[in-house]
Length: 140
Picture 1: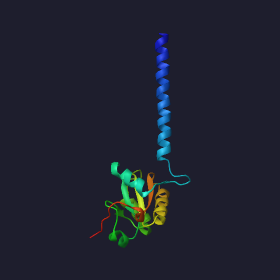
Picture 2: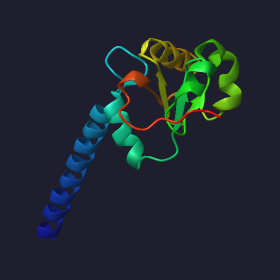
Picture 3: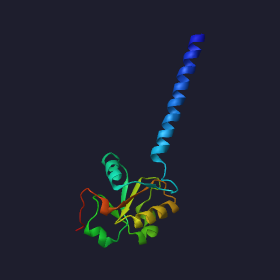
Picture 4: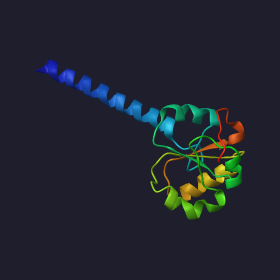
C-alpha cells in the first residue's frame, strides 16, 4: 500500500509541474505586448501564424482607395475612420483573433487600441503593408 501511495504522489506532482510549466509557456506566448491591451507582432511573424492558423480575421484599416490599390489576400477593409461605426456589424465575435494592419503601422496601432476599447479581446497589431513580403491583390 505504501508503494502505491508514493507512486500516486510522484505522478500527481509531475502532472502539477507539467500544468504549471504549460501555463507559463502559454502566458509568455500569448500575453499582450508590454504595456498594451493588444499584442504587437511583425508582419513576418503574422505571415508565419497565418500559414497554420484558421478562424482569424485580417483587417486593413487604410482607406478604401488604398485597399483597392493593393492589399493582403483575404483582408477586409474597414477604414480607421469607420471602425467604431462598422465594428459591431463586420466584427461580431469579440473573441475572434483579429490581425490589424495599415500602410506603415500608425493607423493599425490606433485601430488595435480602439478595438480593445470596444472590448475585443484577441487583437493583434501587425504593422504596415510596407513590411509585407507576401503577395498582394488589387480590388476590381
